[in-house]
Each structure stands twice: as C-alpha cells, then as structure tokens.
Length: 314
Ligand SMILES: [Zn+2]
Image (cartoon, rainbow, N blue to C red):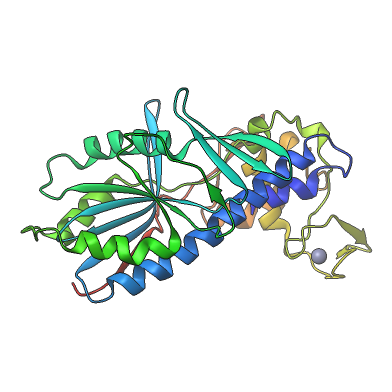
C-alpha cells in the first residue's frame, strides 16, 4: 500500500516514478506468486501433521534481518521456500552471485535467490538452535513462461517450477519420522518473529519530501483529491469523503519516518492541524511527546505478527 501511496505522490514526469512503479509491480507479482504457492502447499500437506508459516520475518536490530516466504514444518522435515514470480530468460551467475533477467532485449541484474537462501539458512539455523529435523531449501518459480538457465553447480538449494512442488514434497514425505513436538517448535519460532513493514520509504528512494505532491490522496484509487467547500473529492473515482485523512497520516509516516513534527507532516498534508491527530492518538496508533514546543509525533508500530497459517492434522 505504501509504495502505491508514494507513486500517487510523485509527479507524472518525476524521474524516480518508473523505479517506484517497477518495485510496486514486483511486489504485487511476488504476492500473487506466494498465494499460488500456498494453495499447492495446502493441497499437498492437508493430510499430514504440518504447519505452514508465511512471511517468516526476523529482525535483530543492528545485526541482521531475514525474511522467508514459506516455512513448512512437518514431523519429517523443515522446508524453507523462496518464491519467485519473474518472467523472461533467467541466468544465475555464481561468482559474484547474481541473477540476470533478459526480457524483450533488456538485461536487468537482480538479487540472486541462491545467495538469499544461503544467508537465510545460516541465520535460521542459529535462530532455531538444536532440532532433530533436517532442513531443506527450495526456490519455487511461479511464472510458467520463464526460461531458467542452469542453477549454480553444487548449490544445496533446489530450483523447481511450481508444478513440481507436489512431487518434491511427496519425496520429502518419504524421510523418516522424528519424534518432535511441532507445536512447541512453532511457538519457539513465533517468539522470534518480528512484523515486517516498509518504513523510511523516501529515504530508500533518495527522495526529498519537497519532490512529492502535497494534498490528500484517495485511498481507493490512489489519486490526488481536491477540496470543494470543506469536502475532499477524488478527481478519478469521484468519491467524496473526509475520512481518508487518518490513512493518509499513517502513510505519511511510512514515507517520511516514524518520528515526525507537525511541520514535517505538513510537507505532505499542508492542511493538517494537531486536532486531526487526536483520534489516532486515542486509538494508540500515534504517540506524542509532552512538550508543546517542537512536539514529536511517533508512529506506534504493531508488534503483532500475522504470518501463521496452519493446516493439516495436529
Ligand atoms: Zn479515488
């Protein structure tokens, strides 16, 4: 949502707009791919005692952060899955590790999923500690039209197309059963997980707030709204409302940073008054420092993790 919000705030001829739109496109494609993988996992695992954890994210400030698309836990194995939904001709370069995508004659270098899994596996093993289950890793390619060149030699990570996933899981089912309390293992992992969110987005794209359009954004169609006699009206979907202000304020924090003064918020929302923040303060979404002068408003990030999906017999 935040990237779409940023795209809506960039002038149409802004040089960074294509880059933001590309990130947005990749993120959406990734999410679509992950949904598809989930249905394959659920189908293959429905009759087994198993847990499927989606978007397992752990951030240890100043040390590392890892994000694993899917973790599958059964009595036979742990499987880490990295999902890729990218089309084109894909080449994996071993040293330095890089993935090259060729599409319509254009070459783009991307993060190598093999190197990504190497790193995730190292940190995951440290996080989980002693466990009797073997840990497997797989890159699942969702885009069916992609042409994948040979994966790096000697890589421990499997590279498979989504259609091969049921067969691959079936093979793993043949591994010996371990006496393990899956519930307590999942509980242990859950205690380590941290929520994932995009923050300081302008900084990520090296954008200054004054490069962005100011005003209220329609949160239904991501278009700049205009004010007519105290009512905000979207020029595209014609929605008339004033209730989107709260969502705009929260998105402004995502873009500019978690701790902001009123004058910083006004760079995007010039009509904002401190009374407009009262509701968000009451509900605990925003905290404010006590001195009236140079008062700072801070976004309270949720500590809830919405990543667990279990399925199968347990
Ligand atoms: Zn609209």
